[in-house]
Length: 213
Image (cartoon, rainbow, N blue to C red):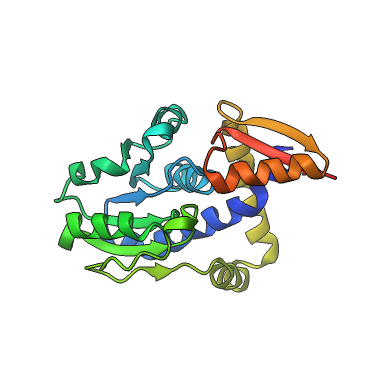
């Protein structure tokens, strides 16, 4: 059941961490991850912890901060209101899963020259993507997972790539048992209700939904 929830999103996290590590983490010593309560962000933090010595900082909403701390995968967890408490002298990479331009702009501005690379992956804050706020520093680069997947498939071979991903996914699923709650729902009304919870931002981050008609 956990594999149904995680397999697709974990692929993005696995490849994003691989891309950063292949790039020597752009000479940074920490990765700052927005939307830290999202499962893709948690999976990325897990991949970083198991594959490198990079420090991770999770940015999240006040409503989710206790949950994010409880997964015990981030070295530090801050709310979006606390961005200015980030150490301005630590060389950093930003991985934006939220798609919230204001959060990205404030993080860029606060870190200044200490921000060495900015990666855009997700848009969990979909209602905030139309902001026109100016972003200073390194322009956010969209991470296109299929490109990294194709590259590693050619370099490692498909069988080796699948083995590495499956091994990493297995470790993540095993560790997720400490915080993941799987819920099963059936029927059109259940699908509609779950979707409305998702778009309104009230979905509990520890819940993984498996839906069927």
